[in-house]
Structure formats: structure tokens, C-alpha cells
Length: 186
Image (cartoon, rainbow, N blue to C red; front, top):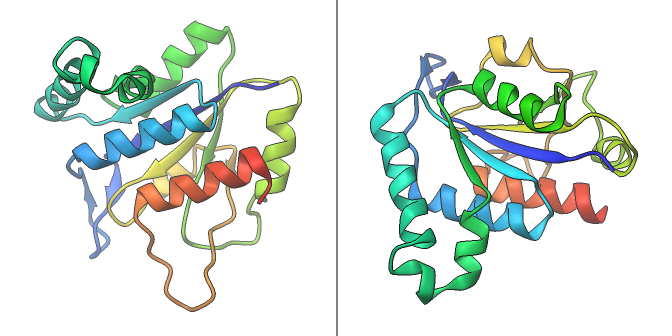
């Protein structure tokens, strides 16, 4: 079975005007995606931001639940937050996964935009069930991953489609749906 890793990229991503920006890390994203990672057997969840102050914020959140008051208040939250790792950018996460597993991970981006060569959830689920290199699933913040990131990935996962034309889920909601589809086939 291939290992699954998740990364939440805060840079480089687009804002609503199409400019490349760095977005803020939110406490809610860290908590909720860590809980998803724990629920859906993700090996580690990387929060990727080049902003030192935001990395300190993430470290503070983790410390609170690991050794601070949160560690005795809610043991399950402690377990989930233990999966959070930090990286200044995607390449640092890739290098750490390679050091840990001895293999470069396959990069799979998520996007709300469709396209002709999108990987289905079923195909990625099958890949994860078979022996193979680790898979790093990339989620973007803001208005999505930049063209530069998408040009580096091996695959782009098919978008989540609702019953209407609106298609702008929060990253937490998208991560929950995608991970459920990958692990449970729904």
C-alpha cells in the first residue's frame, strides 16, 4: 500500500484577481485537516508557508496540543495534531518525504477547475491500494494552486462537482470530500 501525504500550500497560490500571493495560515485549517489526516490514514499533513511568523503560529498550535494545556484536555486532538509538519515550501516537504521513505513522492494536485487529463478519485484510490511510491496530495488556499505548481505535478485530481454551477468549497470541505473518496470510494 502506498503512503499518502497531504500538503496545504499557502504559496504560491492565486488571489481572486489572478495575482500570485501568500495566504494566511488559519487555526481552523490546521485543526480540521489534521483531524481528517488522522481519520483517513494520512502519514503526515504538511502546512507549507514561507512566512516565518505563520510557521511560529503553527508551532504554537501544535505545542499547545502536544505538551500544553490541550494535551490533557483532549487526547484525540493531540493525536491528530501530531501528524502536522511544517515546511517553508513544497520542495522542502518533498525532500522530507524522500528522506523518510527513500522515494520521491508522486505529486497530485487538487483543483476546482476541470480539464481533459484529470485523474479520477477511483484511479488514485487504486494506486494507493497497490505497492508504489508515496503520494503527496496538494491542496491550495486562496483561489488555487498556480500554473507553476500545476506544471510540476504528475497528476491533477478531478474536481469536486456539486449539483449546481457554484464551485468554490473551503479547503477543509474539499479535503474531507477528497479523502473520503480516496479511502472509502464514495
